[in-house]
Image 1 (cartoon, protein in one colour):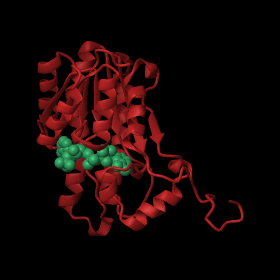
Image 2 (tube, protein in one colour; image 1 turned 180 degrees about the horizontal axis):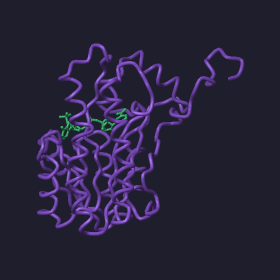
Image 3 (cartoon, protein in one colour; image 1 turned 180 degrees about the vertical axis):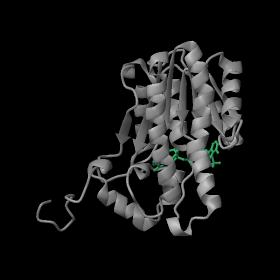
Image 4 (spheres, helix red, strand yellow; image 1 turned 90 degrees about the vertical axis):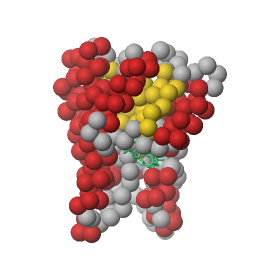
Amino acid sequence: MRLKDRVAIVTGGAQGIGKAIGTAFIGEGARLVIGDVNGDLAAKTAAELNQGGRKARSIRIDVAETTGGQQLVDFCLSEFGRVDILVNNAGIGANVRALECTLEQWERVIRINLTGAFLCSQAAGREMVKQGYGKIINICSLSGQRGGIGRAPYGAAKAGLELLTKVMAVELAEQGVNVNDIVPGPIATDVGRAMHDPATVEAYEFLVPQRRYGVPEEIANAAVFLASAESDYVNGHSLSVDGGFGSAGLMYPLPNSPHR
Ligand code: NAP
């Protein structure tokens, strides 16, 4: 019970990686608020997690709305009285080349993936500073660390989020708030599927050194660590959970290479 009695918010927690994180947090004794734009699915997920006397609540929230983050934090305070952990997980994918990307597409991806996380962090961070305790975890992406075709708005948003992690980690360190991020490689979820056509899936299964997609539970394990006291001296860190993909480079042997 590494998160016993802690109160956690997971944005985009109705499904995929966010659902796995919420499930793991509840399993470690936390109370949970799921904030998701898909309100019905969020309610269904919370109901599933509530079985056995556990405490999960949900609220329909759009993190891209100016007041979305504050509404989410206010709901959490009204349900549980505090907020100890925030996971900025809500995100959308985009697969569009820079020269074809419309301003509308660009702004939507930046707004949800970066500005949404910023607004939630501001709202939750202010409560955490008052408490003198908090853990903020941003879900970033390898697409934010490398160039890659079709990743202009998504990669820029995730790169921005990774830098926001570091800035907020430094600014809030003395007030007892840790800010870290997780950098997933390809993970088998709807976003993963939407961004990867069958040929891309095959390529990832070859290029990831562990030769497979990750599963959401593997991101959740990292999130439990970053949300728990075990990581109290970890701050401003980007934790890759990617089967070694971020470490693989040009020397990675091709199938017919004599070096395999
Ligand atoms: P997912 O299965 O699509 O789940 C994301 C959830 O967030 C959905 O329920 C979605 O609702 C919700 N959401 C979208 N926009 C929102 C908004 N404006 N406000 C609140 N909730 C919103 O995605 P996932 O694959 O679990 O991805 C979770 C996070 O991991 C994302 O930040 C993603 O960028 C990151 N990530 C994923 C991968 C991967 O391979 N899967 C790799 C690296 C990083 P709707 O379905 O209704 O839109």
